[in-house]
Image 1 (tube, rainbow, N blue to C red):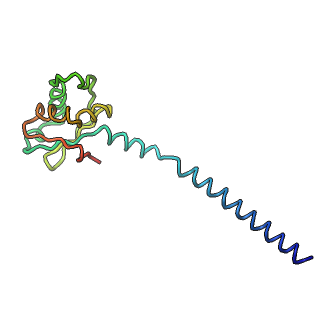
Image 2 (cartoon, helix red, strand yellow):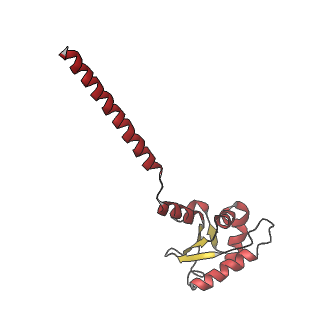
Image 3 (cartoon, one colour):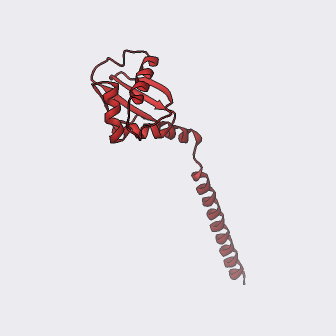
Length: 139
């Protein structure tokens, strides 16, 4: 009888261990689902940004306020019906490679300006030597 009770004890111990591991793995999965808020903000910011590259330094030598004015003017000159109306530019970052990164208030404006419809008109209004390429999204 002692062998049977020892076997039952071992089986019960094994069941308890399996249940404990299963419960712990569920907790680990629940923790993995939680997303760091900083990552969410970073992803949102990336969606609101566009990169514009210039052939020369004519724009990048200007102050950030002057660049902001040129960008707003270029967008306001667009007469396509689907063009964005309420434009908020949160930040302009000048790059060393004759480019700028524009961070807008909403991702819809950035998406529209990177669309085939908006990209061509916007870059032509901004500067004759500008190009915007959505594959060069700033990270």
